[in-house]
Length: 61
Ligand SMILES: [Zn+2]
Image 1: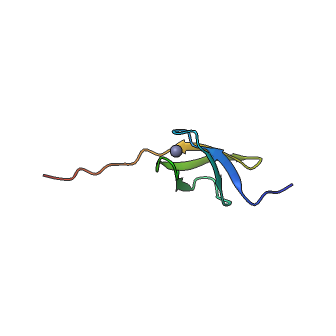
Image 2 (image 1 turned 180 degrees about the horizontal axis):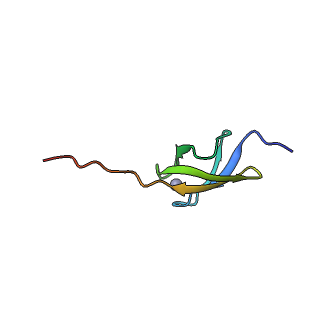
C-alpha cells in the first residue's frame, strides 16, 4: 500500500504533521511553531524529523 502523503510529528511542539512526498534530507517548516525541520529518515511513510538549528546572524553594530 502506498500513500500520497507522509506523516510525522514535530519534535518541538509534537504536532502531527502530514506533508506531501518529501525526500530524505529536505527541510520544511512546522506550521505550528515555525521551526525548521529536516527529514532524517523515512520508514513506512513515517518521517523521522530533526529540528534544524537556524543560524542567527549578528545584526552588526
Ligand atoms: Zn512544531
